[in-house]
Length: 394
Image 1 (cartoon, rainbow, N blue to C red):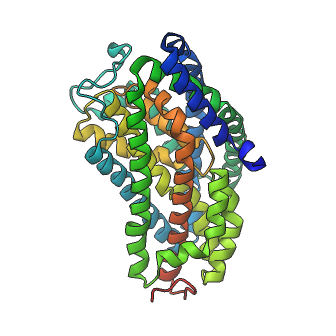
Image 2 (cartoon, rainbow, N blue to C red):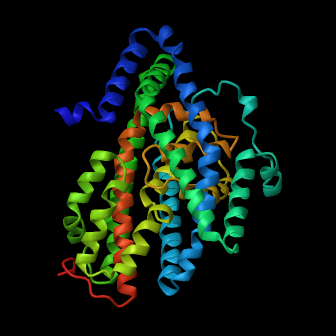
Image 3 (cartoon, rainbow, N blue to C red):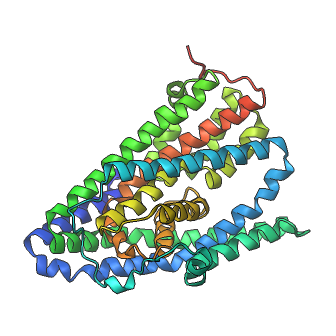
């Protein structure tokens, strides 16, 4: 009971229930609570620039370390990019198929439709020129590549890492305000649009959990089966780490014991020491599914049709920005805010609807991430000819 009372999710749940009741029985007052959610989103938006700039540039600069270790690093990078891109695409496909954000043909009404411009034709340079977020993303990519060629690259990477750590500590404290924001966001949504807004949120949660389960047992399961290994036996071997992740909503606290377990399975220290830490930045399967699905969900909520070119642009942006959600609670929400800011045709106010349920989806994201990194480590170890114990298929 004590653990429940100290868990942030408990207070988010209480806030959601309170917000629903106020929205139902005092809708006029509930609508006035919108500024609480808006204020929180504005604070989150303030973190998007530094976090995306620091994490993307740091991630690209860190590729130098992967290149130095040769074959293992190259194999890891190729695996990470293929599986991460696949998870992003799966999120989009499932969201377009099941349409969890569809309320009715009209969708929710945008407060100021003129703010949300829709490009008449696809012009990448024009989009970048008009979008501060994409300009910062481009600057981060350039800085990351430049750092790879500097003689004192390790020192610069170390300093970037320290600054990034400080920014994430700030984000951690901001996320303690999530119950307040969830209360305001849920109260406003129910007060203005009625109880029908709960239905798409429930559909999104259900769709996301089902998608992540299918990804784990089918996609990752088939990858392991190719190497005569069992996903079920792998999960049984790391069940303690999965419980840690579930309790903290973050995959980082379980990293040390996970690395130890993977070594006991037969993965060499060199493979584990390289793949697991870098996988926390480059191979976030659960976060990728959440991000792509959430963007499509908000577009559906406001009845915004995305063309094929816009969906491809979104995937390209997410392939980069998702590297900024490195296992830290709340960072997935930051990356989502950054991605929406890069797509002006989708109202960023839609984040207010996700505030209430984001905390309950963070556990699923983190668990999928750690399972994905465990599979990646085992696969790279098998590619290196290492013998894996305890998780062989029958």
